[in-house]
Amino acid sequence: MGRKLDPTKKEKRGPGRKARKQKGAETELARFLPAGDDENAKRLSSRARKRAAKRRLNSAEAPETNKLTGVKPLLGKPSKEAVQCPGKKGAQALFPTARAKKRPAPPHSSEDEEEEDEDDSAEEGVAKQGNLWDSDDSDAAMIDDYGVDSASEDEDDEELLPIEKAARKQKAQEAVAGDWTEESSDEEEGLSPDSGPGKDEEDEDGDSGDLQINVDADAFVLPPAGENEQDAQAPDLQRVHQRIQDIVGVLRDFATRREEGRSRAEYLNRLQKDLATYYSYGDFLLGKLMDLFPLSELVEFLEANEVPRPITLRTNTLKTRRRDLAQALINRGVNLDPLGKWSKTGLVVYDSSVPIGATPEYLAGHYMLQGASSMLPVMALAPQEHERVLDMCCAPGGKTSYIAQLMKNTGVILANDANAERLKSVVGNLHRLGVTNTIISHYDGRQFPKVAGGFDRVLLDAPCSGTGVISKDPAVKTNKDEKDILRCAHLQKELLLSAIDSVSATSKTGGYIVYCTCSIMVEENEWVVDYALNKRNVRLVPTGLDFGQEGFTRFRERRFHPTLRSTRRFYPHTHNMDGFFIAKFKKFANFIPQSQPQPQPGE
Image 1 (cartoon, one colour):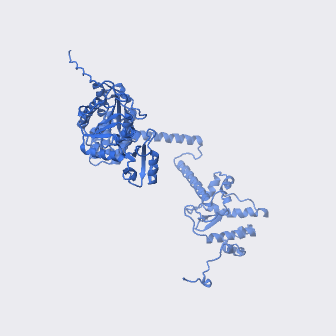
Image 2: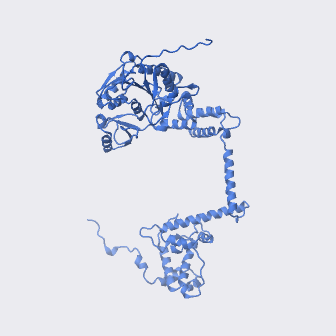
Image 3: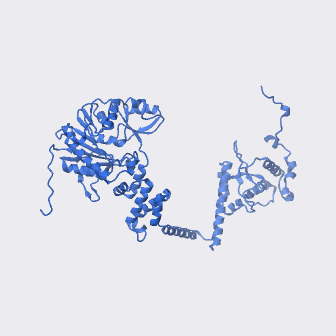
């Protein structure tokens, strides 16, 4: 079915490529040669006149060219003979690419040079191809006037496509136009256009000097108090962010870049307000962070808290191997990698096409969703098989299951937590992961030595202010004050003393206590550890972790025990994990030392 094509009614589309090559084009030469060119026509041979007529025919029938490059798009193999260029009045001329540069015409004294005359007549179109703005001057002619070696360029042009050649020519024209405008501007300023290279170097040096002067002139100036109040009401975050960068730059080189009559305290006060506005922090917490970090590191820490930490998994070696688990998750569309050289069970997940907390492998207990920083305290504790271990604050059970995994379900683990509601998640996770050596209890950790004692190792993940996990809980930015920090510190001291009293110093394999918090406050970390060193017969030992920053031995007006260098701090902006603090104690005596009475003044 369908229409039948009648070949007799087919439209004629004009002469094809072969038809245009037939003889007889020379008879139409008079139609294309303008009047008054009789002398030029006499100079051409018969072959040259045929080729000229053929070029004009092709130019009249050619499609519209690209306005930017002046080149017709090519579908097949590019022709080596011709590239299209726009003419002065919209007509299109053809010229050989191998001779795209204008050269002076040689004398026409013999018939042997007629071929060269023919090429030169075609090259006259080249001199006009730059007339995109209807000017009489030719950019192609200017290129040759500046001494371009056309012979060397012709060899390179042979290997280029026509569109590449046209683009190269356009760049050269723009460069010549730029040089011409620079020379004209120099003449307007009274400079000599014939200045040599030395003069150019002096000008460049002078320009750079002026630029340096301008930079110095634009030194940062602290805004007045009225503008600060306006920023507090309707802050422009982009301007506030720029001011933060300016103030940090001034404080890095305060002696030379500060404003006259301004103190360092004024800059710090303005910086604190801007940081609180831009990152939505309370004044108390931001002041603590400014005391804790250098200025450059402070901004990195605040930026890291705005980005969530990577999703990490811990392989449950009680049921599977990491290699098998990784392959199974990859088959389900999970993109993951090993967590790091320091962990033999961790995996980091970049993206997943399935819910990572609802896969069959997760429900079968092959892995536990656990942060990278939460694996470190258990690695520092290093539990051994057949030991008695106490996890004093165990919820939601990630660290407890990791301890059971390292102990290969041998020995006994007592998992305790003061919150009965949170113990439900502990029971569920231990059942799912196949842990069978754990007893769950619900006691206040501060009274635990009265319940049970004589443990080989104790892990205390103490409740804290959560300043290391701001990316998980942004409410910490504003809802913490001095009382909250001191209240947490007091509770942590009581729990740590209770944990130390629950350990047996006579244990053959243990006698270790690991204290950790997800806080970066010195009051909750070094201060608590130093207090325990003074109150119990314990000493600090290396944690066994190869990375992390050393704990503080001095902080502002406080001085701590020198062995606090063996504790470890982890930060979001340096280790890409939650902020964490880890300290490991070794108990060497079971009795409690008597505190020495403080001497009274005057005694």
